[in-house]
Image (tube, rainbow, N blue to C red; front, side, top):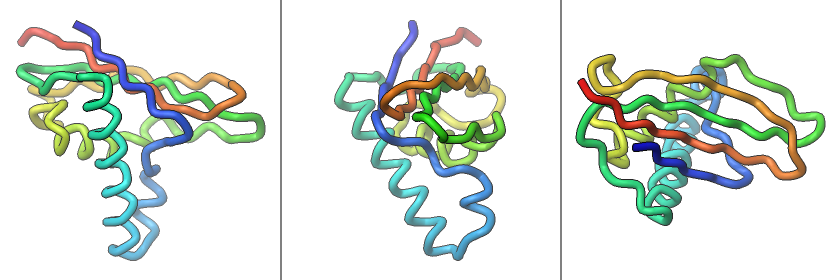
Length: 119
């Protein structure tokens, strides 16, 4: 089963944002990510994880926005998915990192694609 979560005008906090900031700022950024993921997942009825899932990202950038490194968004995003119970854990036995693809569009958005896998 494949679950798709579309979140308009949002991207997870990038790794360099989280590493190069005060701890209170880091907490605020991660909280925003947790709330966005949980809220939009609930809105589309994404079920809690029961087994291993692959996580892929499709990021739509507006004109002049720059691509980030492919690994930039995983830190905060995986924590948000675990907190929302959309992943059991972010360890290898419960989570497989998929692809990160970038496209251009008139509106920025992030699509999280969760694919149920059998262990």
